Length: 275
Image 1 (cartoon, helix red, strand yellow):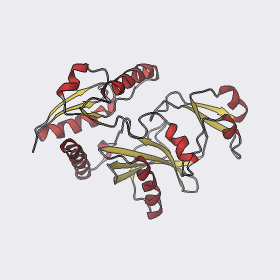
Image 2: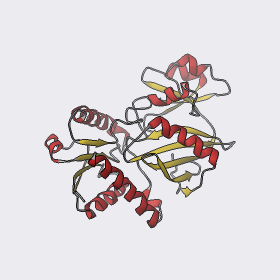
Image 3: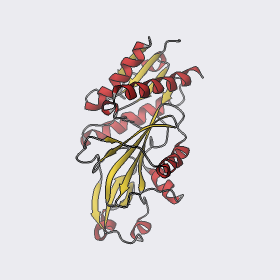
């Protein structure tokens, strides 16, 4: 098998970077040269690697967000036209949350999402709202809870408005390319408590719904994660598509399944490299 020079982008200060170390070690066992860096790596390395895999690069503290956004945007602009192959740079969810507004307009089962104050205020049966930066990713940083009376005062350009919805749990679906490999449920949710997840089987109707979004994302290489809220009546509503820093919770998987997932991921990357 051909050997490759692989650059994995990760945040070494994040406790979740262990997942990226697991992936790097598995690529190395296949004989590849693998280096792990953060987003601010030296530009001269661009010409020395066959592929750059964007992994858990996200900021740990809220005050780090401007630094993250600066280097993330600089890197994307720098490498977009370079011949080095790229994974998880330009897919759905890698440019902020605007896609949620687009999905909602299309009538997909998404948390109602707006960047228009009048449309949000026209919603009935909601008294509380969440404001989120449109350019943010899979983090709760920068979010603000407001009531209907203060919505107009607090809303400004660059924010997305969502109603505050009651839900029972968060359901996360984990893929390599477009293949669903496992689903975790977090009760009550990942934020702010981050409970240990339970692996679950989706119903046929739930799988059909999940694959509606798979068809929308059209992600061809590597990992993607599609997250939902399970409402009090058990319906699923899309929370987000995670392709920008796709944490896969590999440490919670039994060893056999974890090895299968890693192998499928590697084969997806190898296939992409051979094209």
